[in-house]
Image (tube, rainbow, N blue to C red; front, side, top):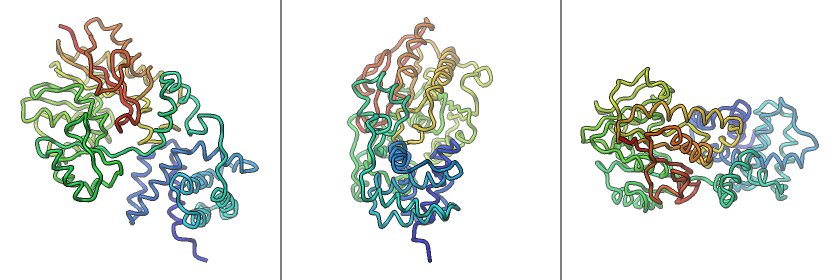
Length: 439
């Protein structure tokens, strides 16, 4: 008897989840290797949606399974456990009818090499198609977040924690940025609407538009001309906060994957400014180079260098910078809606080491700034320890550093900076603190 159509796709999704949850790999990297091998664009979209849904709601689904299974599956059957998450995501997060999801998912058990468990998977998913999933009164389980993160968010943002947890489990919109030297936002919006796409301008960003329903980039008008980038609105605001001038010498200290690098380059030229973009990861730095080339911004005054920003003795030429962007490595707790695997990869024990690295970057880069120069410290975190407390500690130990005010476009006041929480104005969670070196 032939397996139902789609069983192989469900097995691929289960293997992808097993790589993310069992091996600690990032969802982005796993999908980057899996999706190109799926020929049909509709199948690619379904596989991606299943993985996102399963990771967004993983803990809630695992609670339901714990109530329905007499005993947990054996460790060797972890891929089948992931297949059950695949099935529940189809029925719950994606709302697929049982006839489209259950049979194909159950038969995928054979593809995973565990045919004795076909009946178990089928029975559990049939039950899920008939009954509501068991619900826990525990907020972390009910919203599918790790305990430590719920506790941290509740401590930092007690009035906003419920909204943040809900937002983290919703898909993010697609934000676009035009190069104003090549394309006006009105023309982009007109073209998108002519293609039947519901696009809206941003009241905070004159060169940005938002698509609530993301599409593949190759369907975007002007994508192949280099006039358009995909970049969340909160990330775009970081460059606006730094406000590099056309003749500035600018350092982008942690540049990959290159969205802010290209945005800075667009602002510097055709002036006499100079941009140095660093990153410690050679593979990710290659993406910065590709990004610059696609937009036609690989000018002689844009330099890309493989280097550790925290050790300037190895790469700095002694000429001070007028502006430094430090988009610091962080917990990434502000972009969980885009990368739901962050919830399962981060641990509370990781945060002190992340904070120490951020402090080391601040202390190492500050001497490179010219008197009167500006450094923007930014993260895609919502944890106060990485953000306002990190900046407060830096200001306390750095006599020639002063915080400059940022307006309400950048979020709510948070210590010496501003904080955006996930979903506000449709943007990611982000923190900004603009610091000036006093003469």
